[in-house]
Image 1 (cartoon, helix red, strand yellow):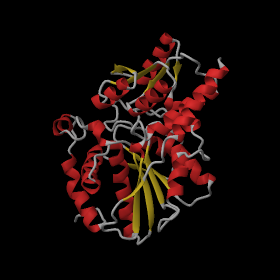
Image 2 (cartoon, rainbow, N blue to C red; image 1 turned 180 degrees about the vertical axis):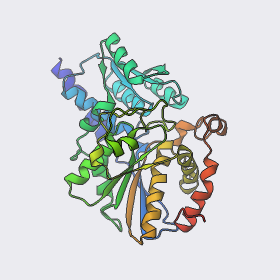
Image 3 (cartoon, rainbow, N blue to C red; image 1 turned 90 degrees about the horizontal axis):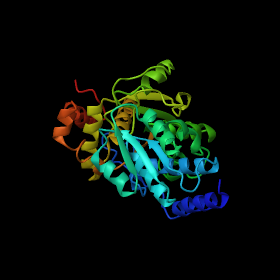
Length: 353
C-alpha cells in the first residue's frame, strides 16, 4: 500500500469538497396547511447531481482509510445509476478505472453520464450485487458495496452529513426543530444517518421512510424478517430493494409509508408546476409521504415543519417518468392520483367524499 498516494488521494477529495457549496433548503408554499411548513433539501445541485454525491465521497474516504484502494485499483460498484455517477466522478478525480454493474432498464441519461465521467457500464438483467462481486474478482479490483457500507461509511455525528446540514439550515425557521424528516431508502444509508443524528442530538424529530412498490423495506420494518424478497425490481430508480440490505437500520425509523409508484409520478408532475423544474421519482415518493403526514397533522390541528429531500433532477428521466409512452408501457397511471393531489393542495386533506 502506497501511503503517499493515499495521502494525496484523500487531499484531492477534501480539496474537491472544500470547493463545493452546501445544498439549498427550499420552502414549499404552505397552501391549505398554513400551520405546517415543508422544506425540500435540494441534493440535485451536487457536482454529480444527486444525494449520492455525499455517499460516494464517504465510501471513497472509508475505503482509502481502510487500506482497500491503492494507485491503479479498479473500482467496481453495483448501482441503479446515481451512486455509479457519483463514484465515477471520484474515481476520475483519483485517476482510477471505474466499472459499474447496473440494471438493464437504467435510464439512458444516467448511462451517458457514467460514461462521460470515464466509467464503464455493465448492464445485467439479474442480481447486480452478485455480478459486481464476480467482476471485482475478475478485475482484481475493489467492490465498493454501497449496500453494505452506506450506513457505516458516513460519519453520522457530523462532518457536514445531510442530517447536520439540514438541521443547521432550519435554525432560523418558524419551527426550527422539524416534526418529521421524510426520506426514502435504497441502501438505507440516508435513513441511518438521519435517524442516528436525531438520537445523538437528543431531538424530538421523528423519521419516516417512504417505500415504493416492489420493495421489501416496509414489510421488513413490520416483521424484522430479513429473508423476505421480491421478484421484481423497483420502478422508482435509486430506492426500494428486492431484498433487505445490510445498511438499512429499522430501529432508527419511527414510521414507514408505502407509496404507490403512480402516486409518486403524479407528485413530481405536480411539483414541476410548483417549482418550475423536474425532479426524479424518488422525490415524488418522498413528497407523497410528506403530504400524507401533513393531512394527518392538519386533521389533529398540529403545527410544525417537515423536511424531505430532492434526491436528483428529473432531467435524468426525460425518457421514463416524463414520457407518456414509457409510463403506459410500465403500467404507471399518474392520472389516477391527480384528483387526490388537487384536493389535498386545495383542502389539506385526502378525504374526497
